[in-house]
Image (cartoon, rainbow, N blue to C red; front, side, top):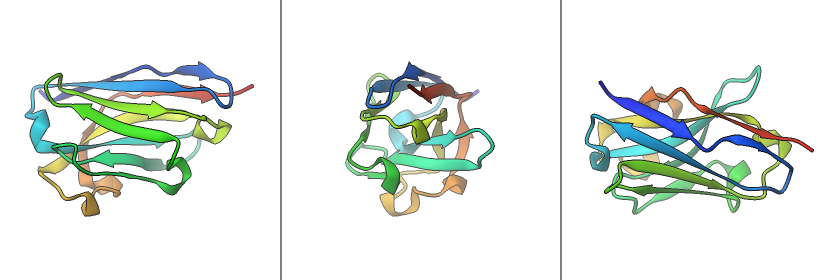
Amino acid sequence: QVQLVESGGGSVQPGGSLRLSCEVYRFAFNKYAMSWIRQAPGKDLEWVAAITAGGEATDYTASVKGRFTISRDNDKNTLYLQMNSLKPDDTAVYHCAKSRLTYRHIHFLPRINEYDIRGQGTQVTVSS
């Protein structure tokens, strides 16, 4: 069955950096757009960043633009999220998520309901 496994979370001070990874199994990774989605305590799921199947286009929610970078290595079946200049408001469980349909255009990706499977998540805590 399809599996997504996140890693790389942790606790950092404001202004710090983390790099999240998501290894995927048992689906054609290079055919699907992917996203990072996060959930802060007591809040709904929030879409954070998306990348198209071939990696040619990316998009970000406004609060992380200029600080986060999403990327992928289709040869390694791995998705990444480089997070710099972290803020306390970035504290959340971060999930990688697979799009429902193949080869989705970037226009459709900033929507939680575009994704059918996500991993268990990795905790990111930003605190002084």
